[in-house]
Image 1 (cartoon, rainbow, N blue to C red):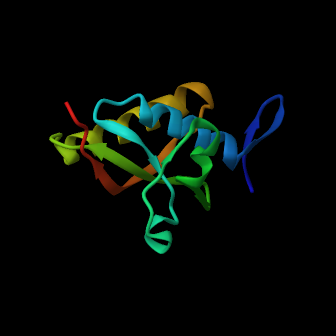
Image 2: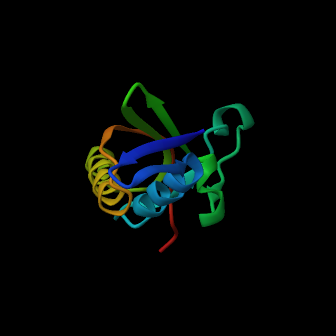
Length: 120
């Protein structure tokens, strides 16, 4: 599937994988994010941090009518305020996609899949 944008010059089709990669890249730049997690983690029972080329496994892009919704599965670092991290990720993803692609995102849903404890 892809997102279709109509401009005065014609039509632009943007793949969901491109949007997922941009959203994942914006999310991992936020403070407190250890990385992206697989959306299949609950079924698999494993917590793995996804690399940049696999962000599409941790981000779901849905288009309902003319609205775009994004579901993100993240891993946060221990000792951080999860609600603040989630809000920062939502804001940054919305801003990044609006600036780079010109998409107005209706919602960014955050699913925290794990907390990573790092040894000092």
